[in-house]
Amino acid sequence: MQNATYGKPGFGQYRQASVETSDRGQLIIMIYDHCIKWCGIAKEALEAGKFARKAEACHKIESGINELMASLDMEKGGEVAKNLWRLYDFYSFHIHEGNIKNIAKNFTEVQEMMGQLKDSWQKALGQVRQDRDFSSKLATGTPRSYVSMVG
Image (cartoon, rainbow, N blue to C red; front, top):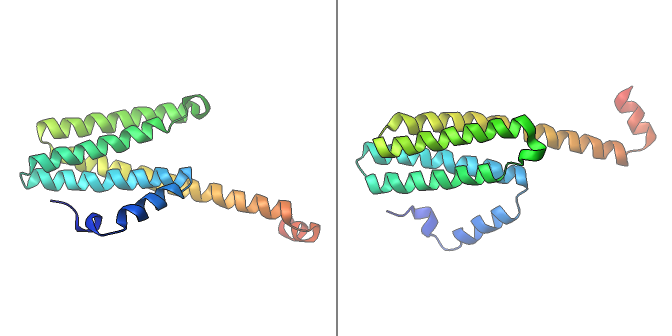
């Protein structure tokens, strides 16, 4: 069954515009939201015995995880990127196992872990944006405003 929201005229265009106008950080958050949502759908489908829907949800989760993995810059990201890769690989395995063996808790566990990681990403992005805003104010402010901020 198709989600009623997706069937509404213009929704696809809105979603496309949202993706096209988002910065890289916002896109990562959107992918987390996508995966978190579909983990819930996979669990619900499994519990309702809707195995085709569960398989569809797992495919969508896997696609999101693959996007997260592809977004990693292993050269610049160093240990953080390597650790995220390992974590995403674990998520992928856990979802696959939940799909094949019909283990609902796998979907819940990945959903919870991704929620926690998403929260961390949001905090980090907020800090980066705040630092960027502060830096731009320093660069464009008058010497007096700079002095009043530091003294």
